[in-house]
Image (cartoon, rainbow, N blue to C red; front, side, top):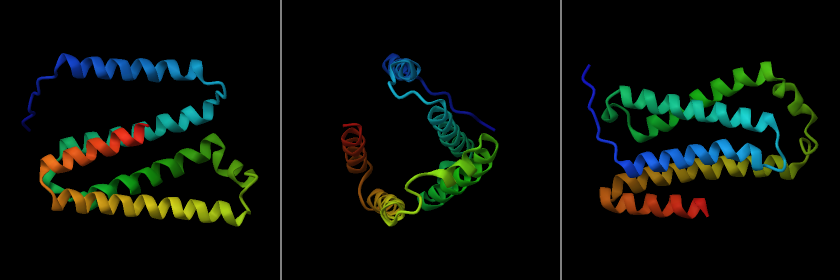
Length: 147
């Protein structure tokens, strides 16, 4: 297996170090610190990281964008389902105060549906525009999401 060596710029290394420093400092500055929330954030990062490693090890053209999203969603559900039982979060979800409210269930369904539709729209945009236009739209979306 051939591995391409990429030259990593100093600016990219500085960005990653600043991001890591911010991530390490966040729990110390969080007024509502809860270890469970950070545990699930780490699990999410591990799922995303594992998917990125899987994607880098395979040829990028071997999976379509929709296949990549499906694998990402399915693996996240499996990992999070198995991780929720030992931590006790699986059964403590039954004690959630808004569990029996219609507005809670409808907003959860709407969030999932809108996220799925947004993913489909991103795939359609990526396939129908040039790579430069897609990069510009993607950069704009990421920056507006950060705000």
